[in-house]
Length: 229
Image 1 (tube, one colour):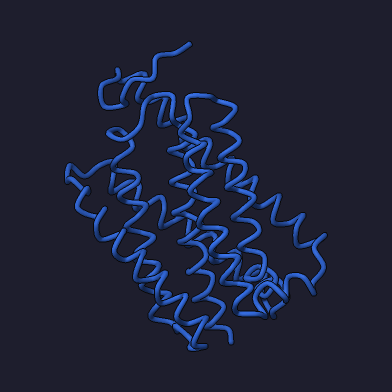
Image 2 (cartoon, helix red, strand yellow; image 1 turned 90 degrees about the vertical axis):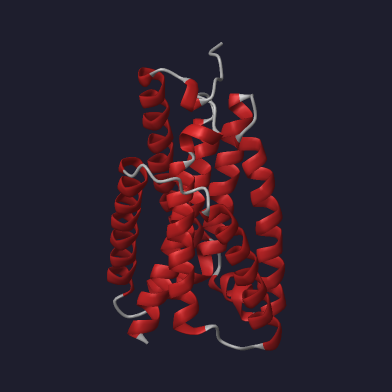
């Protein structure tokens, strides 16, 4: 059994192996999400998907369950047991596919929806690559972003819940703000890879990056869809 030492205290070879495994798992998570999302959109009745976002309190309940379940999945992904780590990652991918169903359903069925999804995916990958490059090449300490991300996260949740309860539209600028928040999260998560994880916790590290990527993709896609309307 390999020793799970902190990445920052590992050798160059062990560190490179950790990064390779982490980003490989991020890529595989994205591919798995695409596969699961495709299956769900083909098998789940449109009436069920419409019910998810048609009733504001139903969607609020779904988001609440997603938030609690994602905490559990994140905890599993950092377990000492490899099988539990993969259970957490797989569970989180399924959660993301479910929460994305209404947005993807609308995108697929709108005029030029396929192009919009492709554009959003391309922009997301490009931004992720650029932000990752900044995190790896810069010698700055990005730990200050943690409190900004936490505060921004709570504010955004409050606005989303308020919008559902009181029926107001958060609009374009909220989506732009969430793109900035997701970008900051990617920068922070990337910069802390060597300081927060052991060499055998690449599954958990991949989950955190995957979560930030999906948040970024959600709001880029939302912006592009609003521009088409």
